[in-house]
Image (cartoon, rainbow, N blue to C red; front, side):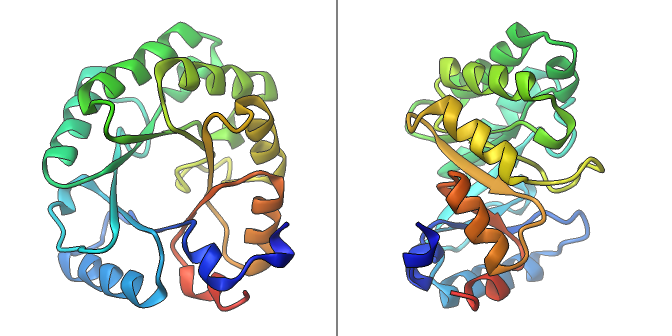
Length: 218
């Protein structure tokens, strides 16, 4: 499939991302300018960087990032504030420890809280941190995300020491959600070949910080 994709088609799948804690307002403005130049779909930033002047781009913000250990009500409030300040999409981190412990009811409740906070109009992506989870936990978290009304499941924050996206995790997620939800691969995707591998595994959205290098390979 990825062999037939054009550069523009791949760009239309990309969340051009800057979530480094040392990022400045000027850095984010440069991100937006580069996103426009590259023709990507969206920019993904920390909520403290909102609002953005990003006409023509989808604005996404993270919630509960990167640990997922924030109280669900805090995640919901953070996500709601981001939406009020112009975010159309929210990428929330689950409580990874709850998933590791097999407490999927808590995972479900966490996602539901954020979904209710942002409303149905907002695209909600649920970050699982798949490198830290077993296959069974990945499947159960995908099911929880679907039950909670999420729009996407997402592999990784890119900040966890266990690693980022893997083709195996993307394939497992895609098989579990069966096209009913999107699958976002993020974390460690730095080349066109890596992006192709993720798309072939079932990714429908890519979270990239080195977007230009990836797109130059298409």
